[in-house]
Length: 150
Image (tube, rainbow, N blue to C red; front, side, top):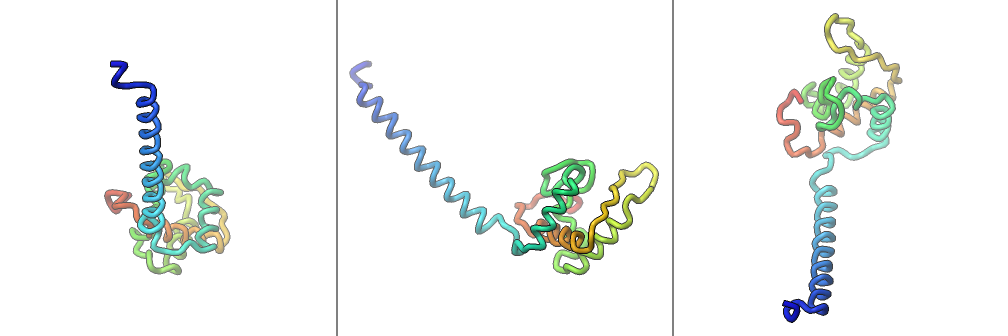
């Protein structure tokens, strides 16, 4: 057996295998990057208003109750497709009005229901949050969530 796998052959197998898997890793990295940039991105541009909305989302810790594309807590509804459910995906003003009306009505005070706390957001912050949710709704999620209700 020692004649079949000499030190020289073992070294060549090691280096050859290592080189092969480095090439495979680089190819998969390039493919993933292209897929993310060309396919798995939002259909809406990433504007300053969307960025501000993301900051509002993070500052208010919305993800502690809501899920966004399946990530987050499951206490409150999924909001990754909320603009589609509300029918305002292509209407920025309608998205703002519905979101603002919903947030101003919270907490509802209905006994036995989960309550969303009141967030004292400015009009600019609420508009930005609505734009962030519209942007997130246009991301190619490969049919996630599996139903409209989230």
